[in-house]
Image: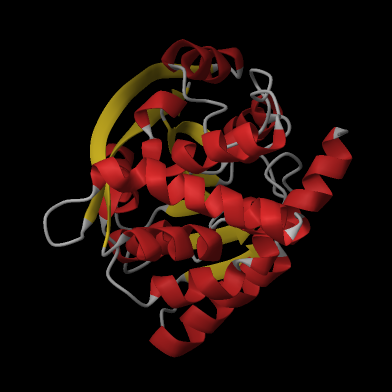
Length: 283
């Protein structure tokens, strides 16, 4: 699939998940995503009055926290390439009355923004899904002011995130599909510490630091885990919906069976998870 085709398919898939993301944003965030947000906000060292850009914002969970940190005079531009996600953020802004968040449709690989515009760029679980993360990171550096910070989080190595790889392995086995080629856009595309560091340094960023963040993904039950994944993962839902019912059912059954080892007494499911957090500065 070409980069343009992948981009359009991804835009449609994530757009279809926007409603579920908007609902989830009304709940207190837990698990690995909350751990990533906490790490990012600490690493970003946001100050009152700063101008912040959030890329691939989804429902702008990170951006809303950032907006609080830069008050009273700072602002946050929460952007996503999926129009439906941006509309979801507009709805959150209207409901909450937050007055220093601006939602906008932007493609991180081609930012329609002036050079030297922001004190910080934040991106949680976004760069790894992009066809050309090197270009997106270079664009992020371009819009940073000298001394500005880029702070991001991506999922770590696949084998350290069974909350998702359990489904991927069941899918590949059922369909007889090979693993994706290294570097293929996806949840674990930037899960290698050295590759991530090289991308940041290759974009001309300085003081690059990459850190593994150990966390957990917790669900109330196996069924709850499965339904949550289908709700919030646009590509997974698109794949399963496109399969014959027999194949989709077999993948579900195999996934639930493989995940049973993570079930705790009482039925709660707790998966280990690993995130890579990275921070860099424009010189």
